[in-house]
Length: 212
Image (cartoon, rainbow, N blue to C red; front, side, top):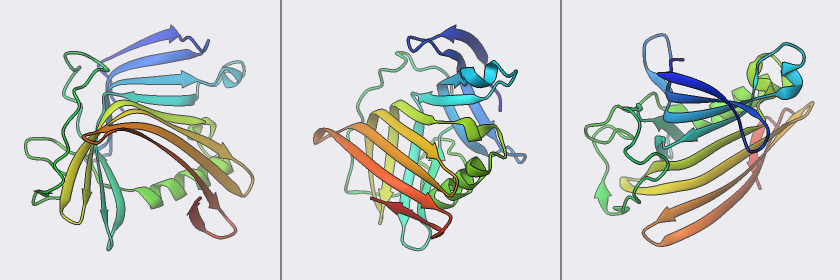
């Protein structure tokens, strides 16, 4: 991972948080896995007392993402490379959806942008929750993932639209043989603001990710 700048601060929640500027997480071949102009990484205070610095909460601010679905490949997510801080951080303009627009030749890659690696959402989530239950790496301590003022491009069956995700909070609860994932979101589109709540369960017994 690379960042242009980092500041350690005490948040309103009384957490120690690293505020990172132009976060880029890449693979060995240079492909982008995650990118955001601003990111907040809150540390787990209980683990700090033990001499470990591990993330408890990660918030991506002003990120640009693409989410696409195809029957053959399922749900895929990719990040656009952060080119720098926006003129008005955390206050992006609402992008008017274009539901009748044709998708570009390469799905998930708007013209003129540098989109990152396409991530298989179901597979990535299953791999992450399995590692977290085993406690095999630092992400095992992660309890919340959030988006704030993110621009989201949606693609399905050749149709493209864009919305603004004002707030998204994903809460993670890992247990011995299952993981519970609850999420809430506030989204703005040309039809006005709307909210979404989901509860899903990843179980070792069934080997399936169930959305309730």
